Image 1 (tube, one colour):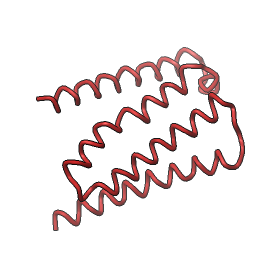
Image 2 (cartoon, one colour):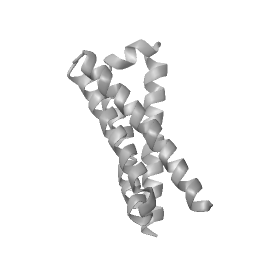
Image 3 (cartoon, helix red, strand yellow):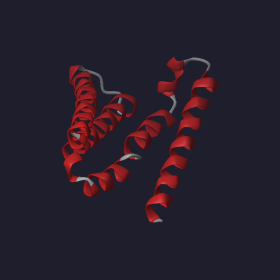
Length: 123
């Protein structure tokens, strides 16, 4: 019962934040103005942090997926750091782009690892 309640809360919060982001896109008139809005980095932060709690529960329940889930969590946290450094702190440089590339690589590799571990578990 507690898992269902947590899932409903997570889905509800995700839908609310998605509606806020859609409103930002439509209200600003162009996508280039979104980055200057002060709500945008916080929306990215919420989208990056929101799946961490359910992923932690999945990692505890299914230990064989733990490595892929930890890599996905690291990619999400790194995405949050990149968004905050770029949009809030206004830092630019090759290291910010490198962190963004690393977060993309971590998310893709974790997805591949999770699919491989799931396929290996069913064979």
